[in-house]
Image (cartoon, rainbow, N blue to C red; front, side, top):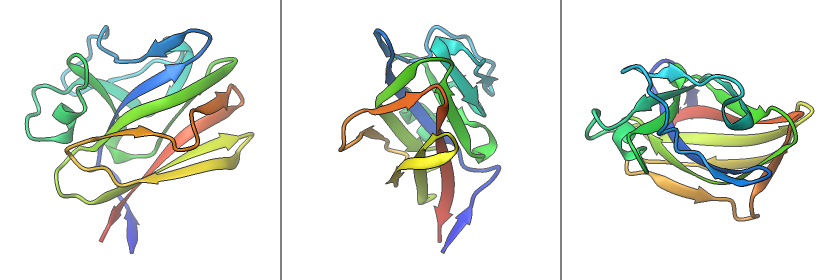
Amino acid sequence: MKHILRYFLVVVLTLTFRQANADVLTFDELTPAFNGTLLANGYHGINWNNIYVANGTPFGGTGYQTGVVSGPNMIFNGAGVDASFSAVSGTLTLNSFYLTEAWPGVNITVVVQGLLAGNVVNTATFTPTAAGLRLKFSTGPISIPSNSRLETNNSINS
């Protein structure tokens, strides 16, 4: 049985995007508040919904620290609630991303859905751990036109 997990689980992401020019987003040029700062729409040409950036290094033994891949920062979905992102204009291509669960042993499932005009056109399901996963899509990069979005849905397995 799956239960939607709210206000506890945080999924940590580091994303690799390609727009007109290849761009790896590390979020390391940002200076977030200790508990995280909401990413502003337009950052790297992307609209962000419920996605925060924080310095993950102070949180040893958690997925927050594991989510730090390059410099001190990582991103997460606020309060464990679903999050999404989309291109401000044009097409955004998602090549790969790192994914961890915030707290070891929670046993979560993350469903990533690509939506086009509100309709699901691609779905991938992942079971991350606090040790982290680098995810690449077996079908190749996912292109996300500006009238679409990529959503994450979190649930805990029991």
